[in-house]
Length: 254
Length: 361
Image (cartoon, rainbow over all chains, first blue to last red; front, side, top):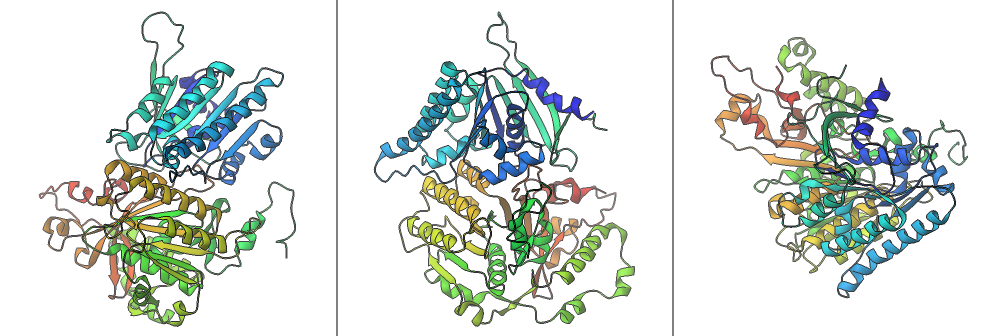
Protein backbone atom coordinates (compact mmCIF):
# COMPACT_ATOMS: atom_id res chain seq x y z
CA UNK A 1 0.00 0.00 0.00
CA UNK A 2 2.77 2.34 0.87
CA UNK A 3 4.34 1.63 -2.47
CA UNK A 4 1.32 2.66 -4.43
CA UNK A 5 1.13 5.86 -2.45
CA UNK A 6 4.73 6.77 -2.91
CA UNK A 7 4.18 6.31 -6.59
CA UNK A 8 1.74 9.16 -6.75
CA UNK A 9 4.59 11.63 -6.89
CA UNK A 10 6.64 9.37 -9.15
CA UNK A 11 3.66 8.93 -11.40
CA UNK A 12 3.08 12.65 -11.65
CA UNK A 13 6.73 13.40 -12.28
CA UNK A 14 7.07 10.64 -14.86
CA UNK A 15 9.88 8.33 -15.78
CA UNK A 16 13.28 9.63 -14.92
CA UNK A 17 15.50 10.52 -17.81
CA UNK A 18 18.55 12.63 -18.24
CA UNK A 19 18.42 16.32 -18.83
CA UNK A 20 15.31 17.13 -16.96
CA UNK A 21 14.76 20.26 -14.92
CA UNK A 22 12.61 19.99 -11.81
CA UNK A 23 11.71 23.09 -9.84
CA UNK A 24 10.36 22.71 -6.33
CA UNK A 25 8.63 25.71 -4.81
CA UNK A 26 7.48 26.05 -1.26
CA UNK A 27 6.47 28.67 1.27
CA UNK A 28 7.07 29.53 4.91
CA UNK A 29 4.17 27.45 6.18
CA UNK A 30 5.03 24.29 4.27
CA UNK A 31 8.55 23.24 3.54
CA UNK A 32 9.16 21.48 0.25
CA UNK A 33 12.58 20.11 1.11
CA UNK A 34 11.21 16.59 1.45
CA UNK A 35 10.68 16.53 -2.33
CA UNK A 36 14.36 17.28 -2.70
CA UNK A 37 15.21 14.37 -0.43
CA UNK A 38 12.93 12.17 -2.47
CA UNK A 39 14.82 12.96 -5.66
CA UNK A 40 18.12 12.62 -3.86
CA UNK A 41 17.21 9.18 -2.64
CA UNK A 42 15.90 8.12 -6.02
CA UNK A 43 19.03 9.25 -7.82
CA UNK A 44 21.22 7.39 -5.39
CA UNK A 45 19.21 4.20 -5.73
CA UNK A 46 21.52 1.17 -5.58
CA UNK A 47 20.33 -0.11 -8.98
CA UNK A 48 21.46 2.96 -10.85
CA UNK A 49 24.86 4.53 -11.10
CA UNK A 50 23.71 8.12 -11.19
CA UNK A 51 25.74 10.85 -9.58
CA UNK A 52 24.35 13.71 -7.51
CA UNK A 53 26.06 17.03 -7.06
CA UNK A 54 24.41 18.71 -4.11
CA UNK A 55 24.88 22.43 -3.57
CA UNK A 56 23.75 23.16 -0.04
CA UNK A 57 23.12 26.71 1.07
CA UNK A 58 20.78 26.04 3.91
CA UNK A 59 22.01 23.08 5.95
CA UNK A 60 25.27 21.36 6.80
CA UNK A 61 26.07 17.85 5.60
CA UNK A 62 25.13 16.23 8.90
CA UNK A 63 21.55 17.38 8.49
CA UNK A 64 21.11 15.75 5.10
CA UNK A 65 23.05 12.71 6.15
CA UNK A 66 20.80 12.02 9.08
CA UNK A 67 17.61 12.49 7.12
CA UNK A 68 18.70 10.32 4.22
CA UNK A 69 20.00 7.66 6.55
CA UNK A 70 16.53 7.34 8.01
CA UNK A 71 15.25 6.88 4.49
CA UNK A 72 17.72 4.09 3.92
CA UNK A 73 20.37 5.93 1.96
CA UNK A 74 23.81 6.43 3.40
CA UNK A 75 25.29 9.62 2.01
CA UNK A 76 28.70 9.04 3.57
CA UNK A 77 29.07 5.77 1.73
CA UNK A 78 27.85 7.30 -1.52
CA UNK A 79 30.32 10.10 -1.03
CA UNK A 80 33.12 7.58 -0.69
CA UNK A 81 31.91 5.72 -3.76
CA UNK A 82 31.99 8.94 -5.77
CA UNK A 83 28.30 9.03 -6.37
CA UNK A 84 27.53 11.97 -4.16
CA UNK A 85 29.33 15.30 -4.26
CA UNK A 86 28.47 17.70 -1.48
CA UNK A 87 29.34 21.37 -1.90
CA UNK A 88 28.89 23.10 1.43
CA UNK A 89 27.99 26.68 0.61
CA UNK A 90 26.69 27.49 4.06
CA UNK A 91 29.32 30.14 4.57
CA UNK A 92 29.79 31.22 0.97
CA UNK A 93 30.05 34.97 0.88
CA UNK A 94 30.36 37.07 -2.20
CA UNK A 95 31.02 40.42 -0.52
CA UNK A 96 30.68 43.55 -2.55
CA UNK A 97 33.28 45.65 -0.83
CA UNK A 98 35.41 45.82 -3.94
CA UNK A 99 32.65 46.37 -6.41
CA UNK A 100 30.55 44.01 -8.42
CA UNK A 101 33.28 41.72 -9.67
CA UNK A 102 33.64 39.87 -6.42
CA UNK A 103 30.01 38.89 -6.24
CA UNK A 104 30.27 37.26 -9.57
CA UNK A 105 33.58 35.69 -8.69
CA UNK A 106 32.07 33.73 -5.82
CA UNK A 107 29.39 32.29 -8.05
CA UNK A 108 31.83 31.79 -10.90
CA UNK A 109 34.07 29.79 -8.62
CA UNK A 110 31.08 27.73 -7.58
CA UNK A 111 30.13 27.14 -11.19
CA UNK A 112 33.71 26.15 -11.93
CA UNK A 113 33.54 23.61 -9.15
CA UNK A 114 30.28 22.19 -10.46
CA UNK A 115 31.56 22.03 -14.01
CA UNK A 116 34.74 20.32 -12.90
CA UNK A 117 32.79 17.69 -11.00
CA UNK A 118 30.45 17.15 -13.95
CA UNK A 119 33.37 16.75 -16.32
CA UNK A 120 35.08 14.20 -14.12
CA UNK A 121 32.00 12.08 -13.64
CA UNK A 122 30.78 12.22 -17.21
CA UNK A 123 34.16 11.08 -18.46
CA UNK A 124 33.92 7.88 -16.44
CA UNK A 125 32.67 4.80 -18.26
CA UNK A 126 29.06 3.67 -18.07
CA UNK A 127 25.91 5.57 -18.79
CA UNK A 128 25.11 7.70 -15.84
CA UNK A 129 23.00 10.76 -15.30
CA UNK A 130 24.40 13.56 -13.25
CA UNK A 131 21.83 15.39 -11.19
CA UNK A 132 22.59 18.82 -9.84
CA UNK A 133 20.57 19.84 -6.80
CA UNK A 134 20.43 23.29 -5.29
CA UNK A 135 18.99 23.98 -1.83
CA UNK A 136 17.97 26.74 -2.21
CA UNK A 137 18.05 29.47 -4.86
CA UNK A 138 16.86 32.35 -2.71
CA UNK A 139 19.90 31.89 -0.49
CA UNK A 140 22.22 32.19 -3.48
CA UNK A 141 20.69 35.58 -3.95
CA UNK A 142 21.44 36.47 -0.35
CA UNK A 143 25.00 35.25 -0.73
CA UNK A 144 25.32 37.39 -3.84
CA UNK A 145 24.04 40.34 -1.86
CA UNK A 146 20.86 40.72 -3.82
CA UNK A 147 22.21 40.90 -7.33
CA UNK A 148 19.63 38.63 -8.88
CA UNK A 149 21.17 39.07 -12.31
CA UNK A 150 24.28 37.28 -11.18
CA UNK A 151 22.18 34.49 -9.79
CA UNK A 152 20.32 34.24 -13.09
CA UNK A 153 23.63 34.17 -14.93
CA UNK A 154 24.78 31.41 -12.65
CA UNK A 155 21.64 29.40 -13.29
CA UNK A 156 21.96 29.88 -17.02
CA UNK A 157 25.52 28.63 -16.90
CA UNK A 158 24.29 25.62 -15.01
CA UNK A 159 21.57 24.98 -17.56
CA UNK A 160 24.18 24.86 -20.30
CA UNK A 161 25.51 21.74 -18.59
CA UNK A 162 22.20 20.16 -19.45
CA UNK A 163 22.85 20.51 -23.17
CA UNK A 164 26.49 19.56 -22.91
CA UNK A 165 26.42 16.64 -20.51
CA UNK A 166 22.74 15.81 -20.17
CA UNK A 167 22.61 16.83 -16.54
CA UNK A 168 19.36 16.92 -14.63
CA UNK A 169 18.45 19.69 -12.25
CA UNK A 170 16.43 19.77 -9.09
CA UNK A 171 16.21 23.16 -7.47
CA UNK A 172 14.31 24.47 -4.50
CA UNK A 173 12.99 27.98 -4.27
CA UNK A 174 10.56 29.85 -2.08
CA UNK A 175 7.61 31.06 -4.02
CA UNK A 176 6.17 33.44 -1.45
CA UNK A 177 9.27 35.62 -1.44
CA UNK A 178 8.58 36.66 -4.98
CA UNK A 179 4.85 37.03 -4.76
CA UNK A 180 4.83 40.70 -3.94
CA UNK A 181 8.02 42.19 -5.25
CA UNK A 182 9.32 43.12 -8.64
CA UNK A 183 12.00 40.47 -8.39
CA UNK A 184 10.01 38.04 -10.44
CA UNK A 185 12.67 36.83 -12.91
CA UNK A 186 14.26 34.60 -10.34
CA UNK A 187 11.11 32.54 -10.00
CA UNK A 188 9.77 32.87 -13.53
CA UNK A 189 12.90 32.01 -15.45
CA UNK A 190 13.59 28.72 -13.67
CA UNK A 191 9.90 27.91 -14.12
CA UNK A 192 10.24 28.58 -17.82
CA UNK A 193 13.16 26.20 -18.10
CA UNK A 194 11.54 23.59 -15.92
CA UNK A 195 10.04 20.38 -17.23
CA UNK A 196 8.34 19.66 -13.94
CA UNK A 197 7.19 22.21 -11.40
CA UNK A 198 6.27 20.97 -7.95
CA UNK A 199 4.59 23.34 -5.54
CA UNK A 200 4.17 22.58 -1.87
CA UNK A 201 1.42 24.52 -0.20
CA UNK A 202 -0.39 24.36 3.11
CA UNK A 203 -4.02 23.41 3.18
CA UNK A 204 -6.42 26.29 3.07
CA UNK A 205 -7.86 25.06 6.34
CA UNK A 206 -4.51 25.09 8.07
CA UNK A 207 -2.12 22.34 8.99
CA UNK A 208 -3.27 19.06 10.38
CA UNK A 209 -1.31 16.28 11.97
CA UNK A 210 -2.30 13.75 9.32
CA UNK A 211 -2.21 15.97 6.25
CA UNK A 212 0.90 18.11 6.11
CA UNK A 213 0.03 19.98 2.96
CA UNK A 214 -0.61 19.54 -0.71
CA UNK A 215 1.57 19.16 -3.72
CA UNK A 216 0.71 20.50 -7.14
CA UNK A 217 2.77 18.86 -9.83
CA UNK A 218 2.83 20.44 -13.26
CA UNK A 219 4.43 18.12 -15.77
CA UNK A 220 5.08 19.91 -19.02
CA UNK A 221 5.51 16.64 -20.86
CA UNK A 222 8.05 15.86 -23.52
CA UNK A 223 9.05 18.49 -26.00
CA UNK A 224 8.72 16.28 -29.06
CA UNK A 225 4.98 15.84 -28.72
CA UNK A 226 3.22 17.28 -31.72
CA UNK A 227 0.94 20.18 -31.16
CA UNK A 228 -1.26 20.90 -28.22
CA UNK A 229 -0.23 21.19 -24.67
CA UNK A 230 0.67 17.88 -23.16
CA UNK A 231 1.17 19.27 -19.72
CA UNK A 232 -0.56 17.56 -16.87
CA UNK A 233 -1.45 18.95 -13.52
CA UNK A 234 -1.81 16.67 -10.53
CA UNK A 235 -2.83 17.69 -7.10
CA UNK A 236 -2.59 15.55 -4.02
CA UNK A 237 -1.98 15.69 -0.31
CA UNK A 238 1.02 14.45 1.53
CA UNK A 239 2.10 13.43 4.95
CA UNK A 240 5.78 13.45 5.78
CA UNK A 241 7.15 10.73 8.01
CA UNK A 242 10.72 10.08 9.06
CA UNK A 243 11.44 7.40 6.48
CA UNK A 244 8.71 7.78 3.91
CA UNK A 245 6.27 10.34 2.62
CA UNK A 246 2.65 9.33 2.09
CA UNK A 247 0.97 10.78 -0.96
CA UNK A 248 -2.75 10.46 -1.37
CA UNK A 249 -5.63 12.10 -3.11
CA UNK A 250 -7.81 14.29 -0.91
CA UNK A 251 -10.12 12.20 1.19
CA UNK A 252 -8.69 8.83 0.27
CA UNK A 253 -6.49 8.36 3.25
CA UNK A 254 -7.39 5.34 5.34
CA UNK B 1 33.05 6.35 30.31
CA UNK B 2 31.85 5.41 26.90
CA UNK B 3 32.22 8.83 25.41
CA UNK B 4 35.66 8.38 23.88
CA UNK B 5 35.16 4.94 22.37
CA UNK B 6 34.22 4.95 18.69
CA UNK B 7 31.51 2.54 17.75
CA UNK B 8 30.72 0.82 14.52
CA UNK B 9 27.17 -0.42 14.85
CA UNK B 10 24.52 1.60 13.12
CA UNK B 11 22.21 1.38 16.09
CA UNK B 12 24.59 2.75 18.65
CA UNK B 13 23.89 6.04 20.24
CA UNK B 14 25.59 9.05 18.81
CA UNK B 15 28.71 9.79 20.79
CA UNK B 16 28.44 13.53 20.63
CA UNK B 17 24.96 13.45 22.06
CA UNK B 18 26.18 11.36 24.96
CA UNK B 19 28.72 14.01 25.74
CA UNK B 20 26.25 16.87 25.66
CA UNK B 21 24.28 15.32 28.47
CA UNK B 22 26.86 16.58 30.91
CA UNK B 23 26.55 20.21 29.90
CA UNK B 24 24.34 22.09 32.32
CA UNK B 25 21.17 23.48 30.86
CA UNK B 26 21.25 21.30 27.76
CA UNK B 27 18.66 18.62 27.24
CA UNK B 28 18.85 15.90 24.67
CA UNK B 29 16.22 15.86 22.02
CA UNK B 30 15.31 13.56 19.15
CA UNK B 31 17.43 13.11 16.03
CA UNK B 32 20.70 13.91 17.72
CA UNK B 33 19.69 17.43 18.54
CA UNK B 34 19.80 19.04 21.93
CA UNK B 35 17.72 21.75 23.48
CA UNK B 36 18.37 24.91 25.40
CA UNK B 37 15.63 26.25 27.58
CA UNK B 38 13.88 29.40 26.47
CA UNK B 39 13.43 30.43 30.07
CA UNK B 40 9.69 30.02 29.83
CA UNK B 41 8.61 26.51 30.85
CA UNK B 42 5.45 26.64 28.79
CA UNK B 43 7.26 27.75 25.66
CA UNK B 44 9.74 24.91 26.09
CA UNK B 45 6.88 22.51 26.26
CA UNK B 46 5.18 23.96 23.20
CA UNK B 47 8.36 23.75 21.17
CA UNK B 48 8.90 20.16 22.23
CA UNK B 49 11.73 20.78 24.67
CA UNK B 50 13.09 24.24 24.05
CA UNK B 51 15.15 26.00 21.45
CA UNK B 52 17.18 23.55 19.40
CA UNK B 53 20.90 23.98 19.83
CA UNK B 54 22.30 25.47 16.66
CA UNK B 55 19.08 27.08 15.57
CA UNK B 56 18.14 30.62 14.78
CA UNK B 57 15.05 31.87 16.56
CA UNK B 58 13.30 34.94 15.24
CA UNK B 59 10.74 36.85 17.24
CA UNK B 60 8.45 39.22 15.40
CA UNK B 61 7.77 42.14 17.66
CA UNK B 62 4.59 43.99 18.20
CA UNK B 63 5.22 47.59 17.22
CA UNK B 64 3.22 48.90 20.15
CA UNK B 65 4.18 46.71 23.03
CA UNK B 66 7.49 45.36 24.32
CA UNK B 67 6.36 41.77 24.72
CA UNK B 68 9.40 40.51 22.87
CA UNK B 69 11.47 41.85 25.74
CA UNK B 70 9.81 39.36 28.04
CA UNK B 71 11.00 36.54 25.82
CA UNK B 72 14.48 37.99 25.52
CA UNK B 73 14.79 38.61 29.25
CA UNK B 74 13.79 35.10 30.19
CA UNK B 75 16.02 33.64 27.50
CA UNK B 76 19.02 35.62 28.71
CA UNK B 77 18.39 35.05 32.40
CA UNK B 78 18.08 31.33 31.90
CA UNK B 79 21.45 31.30 30.18
CA UNK B 80 23.11 33.28 32.91
CA UNK B 81 21.78 30.93 35.54
CA UNK B 82 23.22 28.01 33.61
CA UNK B 83 26.49 29.96 33.42
CA UNK B 84 26.37 29.96 29.64
CA UNK B 85 28.20 32.64 27.71
CA UNK B 86 25.94 35.38 26.44
CA UNK B 87 26.17 37.93 23.68
CA UNK B 88 23.60 40.68 23.75
CA UNK B 89 23.14 43.31 21.10
CA UNK B 90 20.63 46.07 21.27
CA UNK B 91 19.94 49.41 19.63
CA UNK B 92 20.20 51.11 23.02
CA UNK B 93 23.22 53.24 23.83
CA UNK B 94 24.02 51.22 26.92
CA UNK B 95 23.11 47.60 26.36
CA UNK B 96 24.77 46.49 29.58
CA UNK B 97 22.20 48.40 31.54
CA UNK B 98 19.58 46.01 30.25
CA UNK B 99 21.17 43.21 32.23
CA UNK B 100 19.95 44.91 35.39
CA UNK B 101 16.37 44.32 34.31
CA UNK B 102 16.68 40.57 33.88
CA UNK B 103 14.34 38.55 36.05
CA UNK B 104 15.47 36.35 38.86
CA UNK B 105 14.37 32.73 39.28
CA UNK B 106 11.59 31.89 41.69
CA UNK B 107 12.85 31.33 45.19
CA UNK B 108 11.65 27.88 46.02
CA UNK B 109 9.60 25.05 44.72
CA UNK B 110 7.17 25.18 47.62
CA UNK B 111 6.13 28.60 46.58
CA UNK B 112 5.42 27.37 43.13
CA UNK B 113 3.28 24.52 44.31
CA UNK B 114 1.31 26.85 46.54
CA UNK B 115 0.30 28.86 43.57
CA UNK B 116 -1.27 25.86 41.98
CA UNK B 117 -4.95 25.42 42.54
CA UNK B 118 -5.66 22.93 45.29
CA UNK B 119 -6.65 19.36 44.63
CA UNK B 120 -10.29 20.00 45.31
CA UNK B 121 -10.40 22.59 42.61
CA UNK B 122 -8.89 20.13 40.25
CA UNK B 123 -11.81 17.81 40.66
CA UNK B 124 -14.32 20.46 39.81
CA UNK B 125 -13.04 21.43 36.46
CA UNK B 126 -15.35 22.09 33.64
CA UNK B 127 -15.05 19.78 30.72
CA UNK B 128 -14.70 22.28 27.92
CA UNK B 129 -11.39 23.45 29.24
CA UNK B 130 -10.03 19.98 29.67
CA UNK B 131 -7.15 20.41 27.25
CA UNK B 132 -5.70 23.16 29.33
CA UNK B 133 -5.52 20.93 32.37
CA UNK B 134 -4.00 18.01 30.53
CA UNK B 135 -1.17 20.25 29.53
CA UNK B 136 -0.72 21.54 33.01
CA UNK B 137 -0.37 18.10 34.50
CA UNK B 138 2.21 17.10 31.98
CA UNK B 139 4.26 20.19 32.50
CA UNK B 140 4.16 19.66 36.21
CA UNK B 141 5.76 16.27 35.87
CA UNK B 142 8.30 17.62 33.48
CA UNK B 143 9.17 20.52 35.65
CA UNK B 144 9.58 18.31 38.69
CA UNK B 145 12.16 16.19 36.93
CA UNK B 146 13.95 18.91 35.06
CA UNK B 147 13.78 21.74 37.51
CA UNK B 148 17.33 22.76 36.82
CA UNK B 149 16.81 22.82 33.07
CA UNK B 150 14.20 25.53 33.08
CA UNK B 151 13.47 27.92 35.91
CA UNK B 152 10.34 29.87 36.62
CA UNK B 153 11.28 33.50 36.62
CA UNK B 154 9.95 36.19 38.86
CA UNK B 155 9.61 39.17 36.60
CA UNK B 156 9.46 41.59 39.52
CA UNK B 157 12.71 40.57 41.08
CA UNK B 158 15.94 41.57 39.33
CA UNK B 159 18.63 39.01 38.78
CA UNK B 160 21.39 39.10 41.32
CA UNK B 161 24.43 40.94 40.12
CA UNK B 162 26.92 38.14 40.47
CA UNK B 163 25.17 36.22 37.73
CA UNK B 164 26.18 38.66 35.06
CA UNK B 165 29.18 40.46 36.43
CA UNK B 166 31.85 37.80 36.50
CA UNK B 167 30.92 35.73 33.52
CA UNK B 168 31.40 35.77 29.83
CA UNK B 169 28.76 38.32 29.07
CA UNK B 170 29.34 40.46 26.04
CA UNK B 171 27.23 43.47 25.18
CA UNK B 172 27.25 45.48 22.01
CA UNK B 173 25.23 48.43 20.90
CA UNK B 174 23.88 48.34 17.38
CA UNK B 175 24.26 52.09 17.18
CA UNK B 176 28.01 52.04 17.41
CA UNK B 177 28.69 51.36 13.80
CA UNK B 178 27.14 52.21 10.46
CA UNK B 179 27.11 48.60 9.31
CA UNK B 180 26.84 45.10 10.63
CA UNK B 181 30.47 44.09 10.22
CA UNK B 182 31.51 44.67 13.87
CA UNK B 183 28.48 42.79 15.13
CA UNK B 184 29.20 39.91 12.81
CA UNK B 185 32.80 39.83 14.01
CA UNK B 186 31.70 39.76 17.63
CA UNK B 187 29.29 36.96 16.84
CA UNK B 188 31.95 34.96 15.07
CA UNK B 189 34.48 35.32 17.89
CA UNK B 190 31.72 34.44 20.31
CA UNK B 191 30.75 31.31 18.44
CA UNK B 192 34.39 30.39 17.87
CA UNK B 193 34.86 30.31 21.65
CA UNK B 194 32.06 27.89 22.16
CA UNK B 195 32.36 26.00 18.93
CA UNK B 196 32.29 22.27 18.86
CA UNK B 197 35.64 20.63 19.07
CA UNK B 198 35.64 17.45 17.02
CA UNK B 199 31.88 17.34 16.97
CA UNK B 200 31.39 17.51 20.71
CA UNK B 201 29.77 20.57 22.14
CA UNK B 202 31.70 21.66 25.16
CA UNK B 203 29.44 24.45 26.22
CA UNK B 204 26.31 26.12 25.00
CA UNK B 205 26.04 29.81 24.29
CA UNK B 206 23.27 32.27 23.74
CA UNK B 207 23.12 35.19 21.37
CA UNK B 208 20.33 37.70 21.84
CA UNK B 209 19.85 40.49 19.34
CA UNK B 210 17.13 42.94 20.07
CA UNK B 211 15.29 44.91 17.37
CA UNK B 212 17.74 44.21 14.60
CA UNK B 213 16.29 46.52 11.98
CA UNK B 214 15.13 49.30 14.24
CA UNK B 215 15.51 52.82 12.85
CA UNK B 216 18.02 53.79 15.54
CA UNK B 217 20.61 51.73 13.74
CA UNK B 218 22.19 53.19 10.69
CA UNK B 219 21.77 50.05 8.65
CA UNK B 220 18.04 49.70 9.02
CA UNK B 221 17.48 50.29 5.32
CA UNK B 222 20.23 48.00 4.08
CA UNK B 223 18.03 45.02 3.41
CA UNK B 224 20.57 42.78 1.75
CA UNK B 225 23.23 43.50 4.30
CA UNK B 226 20.93 42.47 7.10
CA UNK B 227 19.86 39.36 5.24
CA UNK B 228 23.39 38.23 4.66
CA UNK B 229 24.17 38.99 8.28
CA UNK B 230 21.31 36.76 9.38
CA UNK B 231 22.44 34.06 7.01
CA UNK B 232 26.02 34.22 8.25
CA UNK B 233 24.84 34.18 11.83
CA UNK B 234 22.73 31.15 11.07
CA UNK B 235 25.73 29.37 9.61
CA UNK B 236 27.87 30.22 12.64
CA UNK B 237 25.28 29.19 15.13
CA UNK B 238 24.67 25.94 13.34
CA UNK B 239 28.30 24.95 13.45
CA UNK B 240 28.72 25.90 17.08
CA UNK B 241 26.70 25.04 20.14
CA UNK B 242 24.67 28.18 20.41
CA UNK B 243 21.19 29.52 19.98
CA UNK B 244 20.61 32.94 18.49
CA UNK B 245 17.43 34.84 19.19
CA UNK B 246 16.74 37.85 17.01
CA UNK B 247 13.78 40.06 17.59
CA UNK B 248 12.71 42.47 14.91
CA UNK B 249 9.78 44.72 14.12
CA UNK B 250 8.22 43.13 11.02
CA UNK B 251 6.48 46.31 10.00
CA UNK B 252 9.84 47.88 9.20
CA UNK B 253 10.83 45.13 6.82
CA UNK B 254 9.35 45.21 3.35
CA UNK B 255 6.98 42.30 2.62
CA UNK B 256 9.29 40.49 0.22
CA UNK B 257 12.18 40.70 2.65
CA UNK B 258 9.99 39.73 5.54
CA UNK B 259 9.35 36.42 3.78
CA UNK B 260 13.06 35.94 3.34
CA UNK B 261 13.63 36.61 7.02
CA UNK B 262 10.96 34.12 7.88
CA UNK B 263 12.50 31.50 5.62
CA UNK B 264 15.87 32.02 7.28
CA UNK B 265 14.45 31.50 10.74
CA UNK B 266 14.55 28.01 12.14
CA UNK B 267 11.99 28.86 14.78
CA UNK B 268 9.62 31.70 14.14
CA UNK B 269 7.57 33.26 16.91
CA UNK B 270 5.46 36.36 16.89
CA UNK B 271 4.12 38.30 19.83
CA UNK B 272 1.19 40.61 19.76
CA UNK B 273 -0.35 42.85 22.33
CA UNK B 274 -4.08 42.75 22.74
CA UNK B 275 -6.06 45.93 23.02
CA UNK B 276 -7.37 46.74 26.46
CA UNK B 277 -10.95 47.28 25.54
CA UNK B 278 -11.76 44.88 22.78
CA UNK B 279 -15.20 43.85 23.91
CA UNK B 280 -15.78 41.35 21.15
CA UNK B 281 -12.58 39.52 21.86
CA UNK B 282 -13.25 39.67 25.58
CA UNK B 283 -16.55 37.93 25.03
CA UNK B 284 -14.95 35.27 22.93
CA UNK B 285 -12.03 34.27 25.10
CA UNK B 286 -11.99 33.30 28.71
CA UNK B 287 -9.49 34.95 30.98
CA UNK B 288 -9.22 37.90 28.66
CA UNK B 289 -8.59 40.30 31.52
CA UNK B 290 -5.45 38.50 32.62
CA UNK B 291 -3.95 38.28 29.18
CA UNK B 292 -0.88 40.31 28.36
CA UNK B 293 -0.80 39.39 24.75
CA UNK B 294 -0.76 36.62 22.26
CA UNK B 295 2.15 34.51 21.19
CA UNK B 296 2.07 32.60 17.91
CA UNK B 297 4.45 29.92 16.86
CA UNK B 298 4.77 29.92 13.08
CA UNK B 299 7.69 27.61 12.62
CA UNK B 300 9.56 25.14 14.79
CA UNK B 301 13.16 24.27 14.08
CA UNK B 302 13.48 21.03 12.15
CA UNK B 303 17.07 20.01 12.32
CA UNK B 304 18.07 16.52 11.23
CA UNK B 305 14.54 15.59 10.32
CA UNK B 306 12.18 16.12 7.44
CA UNK B 307 8.99 15.74 9.42
CA UNK B 308 7.31 19.09 10.03
CA UNK B 309 6.28 19.93 13.56
CA UNK B 310 2.53 20.19 13.69
CA UNK B 311 1.51 21.86 16.89
CA UNK B 312 -1.73 21.29 18.68
CA UNK B 313 -2.35 25.01 18.59
CA UNK B 314 -0.27 27.83 17.21
CA UNK B 315 -1.60 30.78 19.16
CA UNK B 316 -1.24 31.06 22.90
CA UNK B 317 -2.11 33.69 25.41
CA UNK B 318 0.63 35.22 27.50
CA UNK B 319 -0.37 35.71 31.08
CA UNK B 320 1.35 36.70 34.27
CA UNK B 321 0.70 34.30 37.09
CA UNK B 322 0.53 36.19 40.38
CA UNK B 323 1.98 39.14 38.51
CA UNK B 324 5.27 37.37 38.64
CA UNK B 325 5.93 34.62 36.21
CA UNK B 326 5.08 34.39 32.58
CA UNK B 327 2.85 31.54 31.51
CA UNK B 328 1.50 30.59 28.13
CA UNK B 329 -1.90 29.03 27.78
CA UNK B 330 -3.93 27.69 24.94
CA UNK B 331 -6.66 30.04 23.94
CA UNK B 332 -9.89 28.96 25.47
CA UNK B 333 -12.97 30.04 23.81
CA UNK B 334 -15.77 31.11 26.06
CA UNK B 335 -18.93 29.09 25.58
CA UNK B 336 -21.00 30.82 22.99
CA UNK B 337 -24.73 30.80 23.44
CA UNK B 338 -26.43 29.60 20.32
CA UNK B 339 -28.45 32.73 19.81
CA UNK B 340 -25.55 35.13 19.53
CA UNK B 341 -24.03 33.18 16.67
CA UNK B 342 -20.78 35.09 16.79
CA UNK B 343 -18.34 33.83 14.26
CA UNK B 344 -14.89 32.50 14.84
CA UNK B 345 -13.52 35.15 12.58
CA UNK B 346 -12.57 37.49 15.37
CA UNK B 347 -10.26 35.02 16.98
CA UNK B 348 -8.82 34.33 13.57
CA UNK B 349 -7.41 37.82 13.52
CA UNK B 350 -5.09 36.94 16.35
CA UNK B 351 -2.81 35.21 13.92
CA UNK B 352 -2.58 34.60 10.26
CA UNK B 353 -2.71 30.89 10.74
CA UNK B 354 -5.26 30.25 13.39
CA UNK B 355 -5.74 26.58 13.72
CA UNK B 356 -8.63 24.26 14.08
CA UNK B 357 -7.15 23.01 17.34
CA UNK B 358 -8.37 26.08 19.15
CA UNK B 359 -11.70 26.20 17.57
CA UNK B 360 -13.20 22.76 17.55
CA UNK B 361 -16.19 22.27 19.72
